Image (cartoon, rainbow, N blue to C red):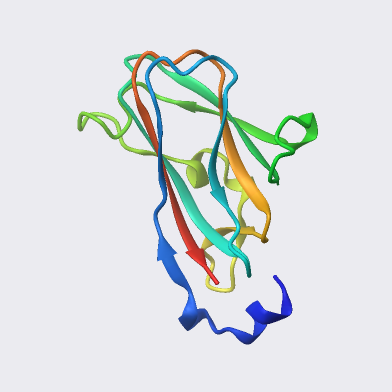
Length: 143
């Protein structure tokens, strides 16, 4: 975080819940930008996946400077999204914090958080072509 964000208190955090639709028919190995750090940084509390797919889908989670998502070492983890997650009442929403907890730090209150400095982004890469929509929601706070 830059010096301006240190001067801002946590009371000035603004909550956003950007949602991204990964549409049916999305080609294999497509990188989709789901969040970028605000001008004074952002805190990501979780990334939630809601799937209309009838089969499991694997995704790579990429965290990097905006535009450098093709660099192999920025691929941080692979997660599996169960069929119908968060869609039909039988399977819960998928939580990145639960599926890949080591990507998150602990704040002073013990909450899992992922800090995105300005210009740092999170991408998801689908490892199979999609046959139904998947919605990705980022629980984010911006300075």
